[in-house]
Image (cartoon, rainbow, N blue to C red):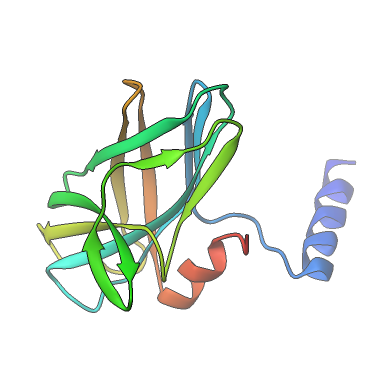
Length: 153
């Protein structure tokens, strides 16, 4: 019975072009992080992290920072006019979500302590203005796989 259900799920995913999530995910209270990925960086000094933050609560919450043992610092950046710029805290709307991905907001891991390669996993600790914190294990994928992990919306 379980085998049959697994086969049906696999067939449904294949038919719709979907795949099981390979991105990291974690939750704390009303906040959740999904689709967390790091594209394998071409640089040994820095890397980007992409993810989706959802807020099921009744109040907006601000992403105020992030930490990782894999880098000296983690900064919130956004792409403006083709240039990457540091950003102020990012508001996650009540009963809504924000997507950090290519061409927009993303996390920059600066001062990598060792080169990151496909197959590695990095722990990111996201910090929120509400006092909440979420630690998520983020896989390093090749760029195409990392971008395809993010939802289209």
